[in-house]
Image (cartoon, rainbow, N blue to C red; front, side, top):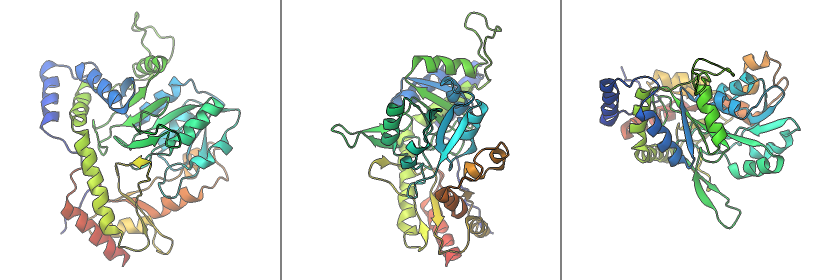
Length: 380
């Protein structure tokens, strides 16, 4: 019987063990300790931001980020339909309203050309979501934010280390890391990310007020001079020192992880380009993508959908994951009266026909070969 190739495996080494042992030995195992501050400072600096605020997940990072902007009932936030539900959850949780646009068919990121038509007098923010390792085309969104006095909440959960060529139509284009482009940005450090803390996330910002607010929100809004006295409701969104220790060790080899992910992307593309009817990930000239997950989308000329393909690959010992289902197709949001009658053809197509292949940092050349052979056999 074939061993299953997992869709992702975390890569953890001796440095992580060393730092965790230090936490256990010294007793700093909860949400205080020097690893937290060092992880925050170094990740913020790596992404070109002033402040980092570590939290318990990418989802809670989004929730806190929306609260930091003061968004509330009636405020609108424009986001892609094709994303994880955490994005809509953060907006709805604040009492605000998510407003959707479709995806761009090449990168699967939000179609920035559709955003301006969705701006109303109630719009307060745009939430670009970088998808599967490829950046959103940010310059048009930054231009709209300036034009209409909007905030940018940048969801960078899937693009650790990815870069975007900003200002390329001007005289001084420069490469900037994703997560350093918005007014406030969020990351996830889930087990399948390029940097993992098991569970965890972070908020980045250059704004003093946002950083102060985020730190308060993650810690139940305790008052600095009176711990159990509350003037506002917050959350327990804290990251532990043990988790931060793992994250810091991971950060120390981020460039190695990026190089491995880009190698995986190239290795798959070199082999899969020979299979007809399969759309592969792209890298636009203005992007340096990190192939967080290597996705494929079946052409309509192939009758099977992604669910059938996943089942047939599973029978050959290949684990996969489906693409996101658009927010406009989520029952929990439709039941709230959102997105009734809305259709986003690209998001619907890639949700139906897309999945991602094993893409973890432990993946070997032999495993990539086995995956491509299995895919070729199933689609023959």
